[in-house]
Length: 212
Image (cartoon, rainbow, N blue to C red; front, side, top):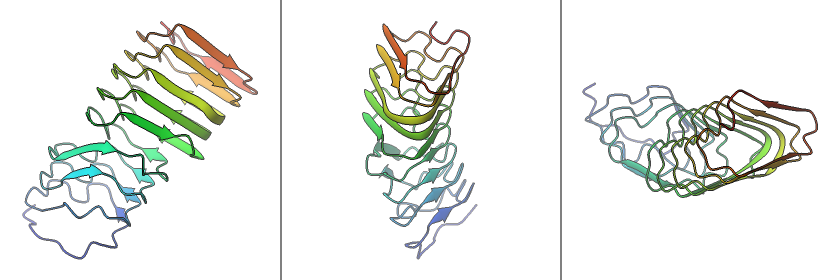
């Protein structure tokens, strides 16, 4: 597109799928505001004019690969995003500034495939809620990731395939969840030395190669 100017977006709440895709001439530095609750898939793909280091407190959902091809986007902190419940695939993949994630106060949480894969400085994650779903490869190749805290998970916990592949996790402890499903090769080539899956009240499923 040849669109080069857009104004009065202060009240923008929903940014749909592909909304600004390939708007290479547009300055989008102010388009994500404190009112934004939803960012759709590929919303800013190939938009060099968007510069971003932080997401708004209001954000609830962010779709798949919204910042692909945006060289000026480097998210370093999402700790303020206390309402964020749904994270699409590859949203934060490879971002160097993310060091710690705290999702312990969520009711429901869904993390898409490769969402935080290849984040070289990520060291710890806290998860919680009545439903936690982590898709395949979500935290794969996070070489410094040593701690994932599941103590606030009271409902169902589901891991996809290769979720923590090549991470540095040494201990897995899930207690008091209603159900746990561990996907194929979920912890492949991690450094686990201790596994505690206790007080699971409904069901426990461990797929092939989960702790290989």
